[in-house]
Image (cartoon, rainbow, N blue to C red; front, side, top):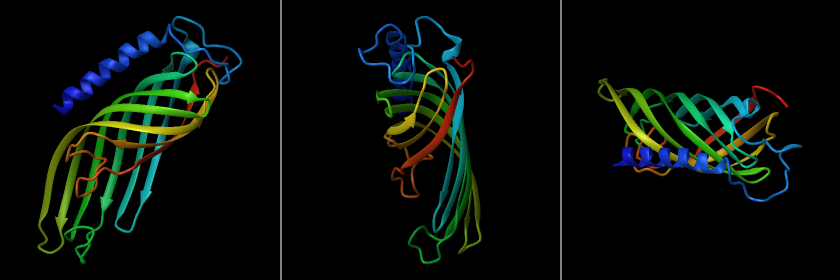
Length: 209
């Protein structure tokens, strides 16, 4: 059911992209000195990505998310993203954070994204994804090691802040949450609760104006 939701939302984003190319709200061009024009423009293509680093009492997390996108107009970007993430969790002998189990996991996957700039510096974002995870867990009490693989669809929704100039370059920071209730989501904690996803990154256009 959740995979169908992700597919449906992906198709919705594609159809939205087609409509947004020709329909743009009346507003002052504050993102750049000129509008991006009509039709496919190579100067509207951009590359970039985000880096993630998380440190806690029992966990360490690092990830990279390269992306390629296209600015449809002055307020909407769409594109594709690839995910690579490594997470390690230390065992907690006090049994508060976990049941004295350490784990290491590598996650890879990808998806689509859309960013709608409601203000020159503020955007709303949606990112349907599908990720695969390889997990190794060790029960420190018994010494038993388990290995297993998991996969899950995700739908990240959130808000971000950034500097964006079509045809130039920009940076952003975003706060997202996975709104799909899937126990295998890489964006959930050990109890299945959604974790805040913070991504900071940059984009640069392939053909500057």
